[in-house]
Picture 1: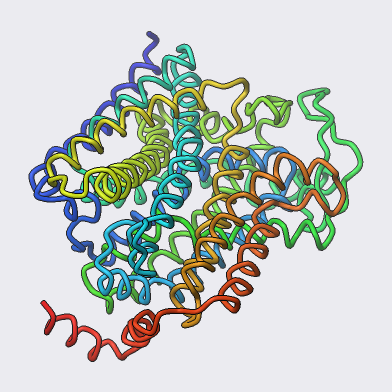
Picture 2: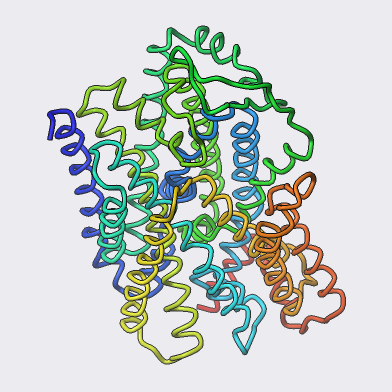
Length: 524
């Protein structure tokens, strides 16, 4: 192993040791009971809640998928997506966070399926089962996308076989998720959120310096047809000449395309890894501070990630000539290893590792809780002890990790496309129901089940069938699926009726914070 690779490895091993150390530190507290393991005993502070929510949300997609997209086609696609995500992040913290924390306490819920089931007082656990299955279905490819990022990272840095690196990454994530549960995950995500932000800013600054400054970047990137235009997309031909990629005529970007990319923001209302942080914070009053921290982190990170792709195109125009193979998603790694001394580059590349494992641990843990807490204890063995539930959870962690490895080792995996589909699934299946269940008194159980099923099903139907028609039908599946789910919830709820106790419970959650928590304390 050459000296540079050895320094890369040392830096990353030190980082991984720190993450495992966090898992060991929180192991005792995490294994106290299922609420501690799956929700941290509702003890997160505002900084940890904010950073861990954003770090687990963004994943390796932030440092690889988004810069790769900007590198390939310029500002339009990546830029409108980033704007949608920034707006969605802020609105989710502003609208959903406080009401969900309060409602989850009211109905004694520690997982998202718990919340949906208990919110509507269901007896046959149909809603719980459907939501648990959807978590497994959509989080498996999500976890796979994180392993893709890890595999590409180690393969690019050390020249090692990609598939072997994917397996190694899965084993590592399993170890510390086993140990510490939600607390370890949230604490490590806090650290990883910091690492991700520093890595982006540092590489971007060095990139501008190497490219001759901001003015020079704008000059060269602006010379590419449509590259710096929010209303046109650059069109690479996949060929290069004289050290520069060759571009064809820019493609126009219409209103439908913009709306489609902005629709990414709708996904936040259904993202379990973010919603759980709302439920797990120690005080409702601290959610305002968390919102400001999370929004600031998100905006800075998204701007940096898109700009890294732009600067990378100026510096290394002809290095990656194919998007379909996912090669462009290595641009951040290339810039880090070319512009930074090896030991420091290893620490910066730990930012990618941070982004990937901060998300994969969340996805694995939430999927495991859906099976062990909601299906095993909720349906199969209702008298299962906490120890039994956590044992089942760890078995499920292993099984889901194996499936995620299969996703990650598929032919030419592109992180952006994997995340694209899973994001739409959660956004359409959970997002509309989350909003209606929190804010519409007349939402009925029948409406909830119908809305969740229609939203989740439409993501598959639109992605695999309708979108193939092209034209206006090529819109991102999240938007039509979200709208259809919302319409179904409203129509079915108008056709059915709520029990009186459901509406009374809804009204009690709408009380002022002082009244609500006084009532909770009295009941306890």
